[in-house]
Image (tube, rainbow over all chains, first blue to last red):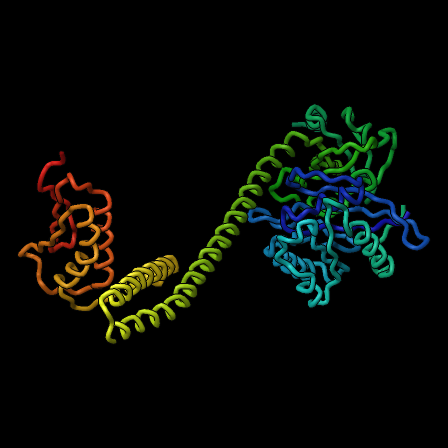
Length: 171
Length: 311
């Protein structure tokens, strides 16, 4: 089956692991557990009539002590940059990470995800902040599931349409 | 340490050892650990490591470089990674690239995979603690900013309201003054006097509120002008005298001879301080208590000196 590697990238605590867990296992836990290293999950989806396995690489959130290891994005078909809508600094981190990844790996398909839409009253980021950069942007809530499935499916579609330029592999 | 010993040691540490035969082709060697069966069928002779441990697709290129030139490094270790086992449970691993030198024979290129649950949990606890501290700090900073905004809004509201009240109040007081200059009978004059005094009191309350909001906003600027101390003291005494007399208390001011008659500073603020102290004194001293005397010294400190013992 066709495989696509997708990396989840962003500052710590924005909900990368929760988004994957919501998408893959349909569950959410309020307990925050910091990720370290890389967590790899797989999810089979169908895009059009094509079955594809998404290899979801959840990369440990960047913090003051540890920088993102861009080498972990090697052979990725694309990446998902996640910010926490309630913390403006996490969107600044998204901008910084996007620049760093593109500088080291060249242009790769990516989308922006503003997570925690269930806490919209406390949001410090507007969707337009991201869209005006020309970035495809989604609002999600890993907690109640809003927008999660759509976001992953749309991105998978985008990667499939992006064609053979990606690092595809067939099992 | 010789070759079999190294392999035995790695096996004793619970590592699964894979030897690289060709690019992309590895074989399990030595005694495999028990956990290996939960990840893949260990009977497979030749395997692609990335198919079993997907994380290795980013580690193997580094391992290839290491095997060519390890330099001074005895081993190359990977980051931790988490993947699901065949039953869907999460497992934590870490990989090491090892180069076994064998003299004239070709070197052996090994990948040791360790079940890293304990080390992973320990590292995770440390990182988690740092993240929670950082998130708590962010939350406190945000609350502090919100508090500052709320205080500023309150001060601004008070300042505006004080201003809005003072303007018509000044008109009322001005009219009362003009009214007093017109022919009035004794009763009318007393009535006008009453609402003029009440107006003065109200204005002073409003001024105090305005001062309070200025203090909170850090906008208080002290005057630096020459003034007569006696004037300030007398004005303060006049204000409290009525209430003191009502309690059968007598107030009087005495300026020590050493205090200069003319001082430089803010007479209005000094007047407020004196008035506050005197008002409290009148409020809290009963008529049976004798008065106390305060001395003004050159240093500006006002120590209290008891002139008669408390009953």
